[in-house]
Structures are given as structure tokens and as C-alpha cells.
Image (cartoon, rainbow, N blue to C red):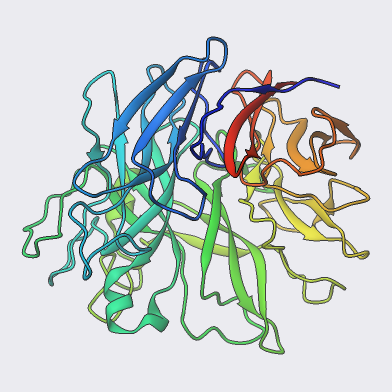
Length: 425
């Protein structure tokens, strides 16, 4: 059994995001300092060297704003993207799902981050800008674009039932400038669109969803269709359907995306920028597909606890997610992005307890089970403990391989605060 190394020791929360927390050289871990994952009151984005213990403060928020949920690009030198709350918050405008933005920090170029998503809430709205809050921003494997989840300010103000969570994509090299008719509006460095399709009134027993979330990029280079065609860009996500009996049933969905950046500017059935009574809509050529149909199972639906994000093997062939087996035990399951029946990857005697990530070689997953950080062999389903079984399980929020595949980063709660740990593979 491998040993574990505690990296942080002070009385602050140290929060890892669920993916892309390592620099490309596998030497530094990026994190924020929220007291708890649900308490968005951290002021700094930091990183720590796993060999020396050296800590660097990458960014400190000011003017009453808070920051968190940092992820790292795969480039050298790296860029860091994270959630930034509003400056000068007041009772009318403060941090919320629909009042937050993504910012990208390139410390080798500037100490000041650049706002990712433009914000425009004054008609006529601007294609490529958003009207709400983006969060959990994740670079694509080649660092050329980002995914995010989104909530809309205008829909919240107009009719909260229409404030539906969606998945979006941000494209670099296409900055958006707006007129700034409202004091809270701002420009953005990326062209941003929503790519999921939701409705506030899904039809029971249909493929309609009223929520899209916990997305992940498919493959290092996308995936292959059954006929051998490569789908270069695609995201997997959880979508909330309604069963024939009208009960919420989370299922696995895929959205196939255009290959050329210019195609994202072409509107589909509705305006990219939305309207005063309608959410922004996906571009033309975006195809949303449902993969899982689990209503017939003894324990149907993707499980939402532990919270996890859909993660795909490096070759794009397998989307992994959590679902209960016929004994009611939470297991890791796999499904092809082209469809078909899901299959069990794990065969654990007790519940999987965490989010998970794939080893860079695609043969293992790292996760928490039986109060230990485990390696799960994808082919055999066998598990190997990386850390001793503890009375309190490691945090389920993040269990992340280093890019070289030699380390797993995770968190434990010590004296009421999350602390960072690594264990060798």
C-alpha cells in the first residue's frame, strides 16, 4: 500500500477542483481557500509545490469580490481559470449562481486576470456574450477552449422557473465587446455559447431535460462514430429527464459540437443570444443525444450523491458515471459515446464515495471507496488501496491523477478544514 503525504497544515480550507488541478509538469497543485466547498468566501487562488512545499499566491481578490474553483491548462507555462464573484457587492447584486464570471490568469504575462465571458443584460443582446453566471470552467485537453455550466440572470429575474442550468463552451480568439448600458456589464475574451437544450416543461417519458450539468470533454481527440468518422469536439453531461410517472430521472447525454470555430456563430432554431423571455440557444449543427435509458432498472438514474462529473477515457471510447447496481450499491459504470447498453466497471462491496478521474493511460480510475483512495482497474474491476482505510473517508469532491500518472491528489478534513494530500501511484 502506498503512503500519503499531507501538503497543507494551516487553519484554512484548501479546495481542489474535480479535474485539471495539476500543472503539466506534475509539480504544482492549484487550489482555492474557501472554508468549505459550499462557502464561496475565498480571497486567493494559490498553488503548492508537492516536492518542496513552496506556496505561491497566484491571485488575490479585492473590492469585496471572492474567487474559487480553479483549474489549470495543459500548457507550459500554464494558464489558470477560476470563478470570480462581483466586485463591490450590495444587497441587490452579490455573488449568486447568475452573478459570477470566469476569469483566466496567465501569470507569465500579467498579474491581472482577463474576464472570459462577456455579460450583456440590455436589449438588444449580443451573440457570443452571456446574460448570467458561468462556473466550473475546464480547459479542453488541448487547452484551445473551455466548457462551463451556466445560470441566466434575466430568466431568474423574469421567471425563476425558466432559470435552467445549462452547459456552455467558450472559444478563444474571438473577444466580445458590448456597449455596457448597465453598470454591471462587461466585455469578454472568448465567444461563449450554450450548447445544451433545456426546457422548463419537459414531457414525461421523453428525452426532454430541464437541467444540464456535471459535463466533461470526450476524449483527448473526441471519439469515433461506429462508421469510423471522428467527432472532434463533444461533451458528456448529466441531464434531468422526467420518467413516465413524472419523477426526476438523471441520465447521461452527449452533445456533438461543430469542428470549426466559425460555425459556433451560426444560430440554430433560436437566437444564440436569447431574448428577454428566452434563454440563449445552441448554434446550428449542435446535436444533443440521450445515451442512457434506465427507468426499467431496479435503481434507475445516474446517482447525484456522491456528486461527480462525467469523465471519459483518453481515447474517447468510454464515458464513466456512477449508478447503483441491483443491490443498491453505487458503482462506476461505462457507456460508449455512440450509445448502447452501459456496463459495470466496478464491482465493489460498498458504495463508491467520490468523484473520479482517469489515469492518463486510460487503464485505471482513481476514486474513494471503503474510506480509502483506491485505484480501480478498468479491465478487471479490481481495486487497490493507495491509502489506509481511515475512520473518516477522504473528501469525495476531488481525486485527481497528475499528468504523468505518478500521483493522486485528494483532500481530507483535518480539524474542520480541508487539507491537501498526495499519494504515489
